[in-house]
Length: 179
Ligand code: AMP
Image 1 (cartoon, rainbow, N blue to C red):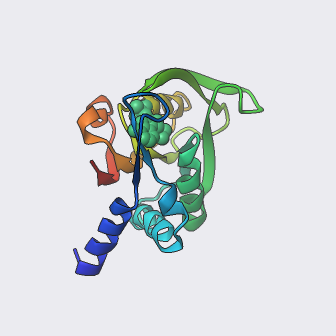
Image 2: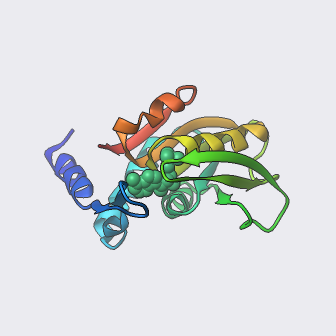
């Protein structure tokens, strides 16, 4: 790893802001918006994913509501492939598959359009952060229901101490930054 790459990664990690007690008491929220407001850091974050997937014959990016859309959109644009949205219940206009999930601070239902991905399509699922893994697991189930192939689950940030990776043990998992 080159020194400049290492220091860029340190800047990326260093710019993530801890917000205690958001959205609930006891949760330390990892705020990635300082990365978005810095053009160089935002590009670096997207480039990490782009370089990882550009030669892996990925055919679709599936991005998770809501911060996953930011990185997923930029990545799909870079790779020149389509983007599919996994959204919280009631947001998608067309007929959708549904999966229930539990997350670090709540519970909910995720949805994806029934034609969101195609059978055997090679898919990367992306979100900003892996905590307990409940959200990503639900998104992966939606993708599997449609018969697509999960190449990898990708996250900018992983909270390693919450063991989300174990919950996702049946899938390849990549994260750029770990706490
Ligand atoms: P989980 O299902 O527990 O892995 O939670 C992951 C989802 O919740 C992602 O969409 C994250 O954006 C969000 N999330 C959970 N915990 C945090 C946290 N501590 N800081 C920021 N986002 C979080």
